[in-house]
Length: 375
Image (cartoon, rainbow, N blue to C red; front, side, top):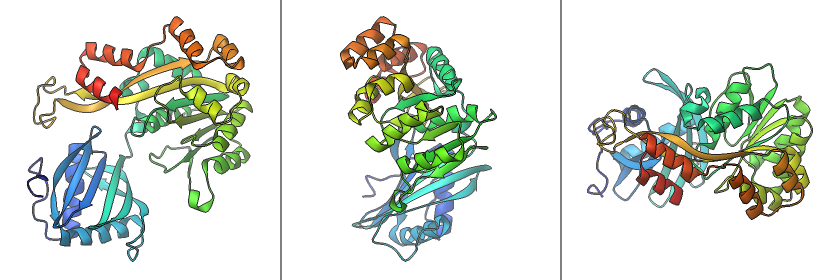
């Protein structure tokens, strides 16, 4: 066990005396590394502390089982979870200041064979919602598409991709722009990750009957101009979202598809009529996150990037606008190959093309683009 899980940096807290000392050291260590998630994974004789950095899991160090149990209790107190419940999953959250930065910490507890596991998501309050599309890595033509779509007063903007591809960050960047206008904005999220000033953010609670679909229906009685639906997961949510976009609201949402064009047949499979989709869908973006070449060493490997050659991530993406001709194709229930042929004739660039361009710019590598697109 110790041979497999070794510390990747010397700053990891060594032999902490208490759970409080261990937790403070782990949080400071993780934020210093710029990680997004911390995994506290119990095993037979010890607990591994693993961190996700630029999308990849790395082992940060080990703590004893005694410290583990105390730390889980401490985390439950901080996050408002039940300290007497050990056999069922729980969720919680709290705010903390680390290194002068305020973090929203979201935590999930899960019972495992060797004890309770905990996964912490670290969300700095000053980050993603303020990033421009260009800084996120979007090509100028896609930035223009997004800007035009956001100027509309109604319609549907979709961002697609797998879990962890940055969809929420993209939508929150859209909302950060819209929040500067005198508009009524509501979000339905599961869970709320980043707080945006001036926006009413609703935490979806399926166990209590507050679903995306029911929340969306209720939000229409709140006089909104813009509504963000965290994810379209089912037929009910899809139909309500389309109806909302059709009746004078700007709707932003996400969908799990591998490519931008797949969003159309997915929504139709969910029961959305093609002619309604033609009237409401404005822009579809599909995206992934690739690691950036470290600026400090140009990818050679250094202390800054922990000898990985990479530091930070950026988007590779593809997108299209539903113009008048594409609307006609949709209304006629054109097949996916027909829609793809139309996009190809209109200089559509796919994610592989975008990745190739970023490789040529030297901001990422061919190996990294290939790895991400093959997942």
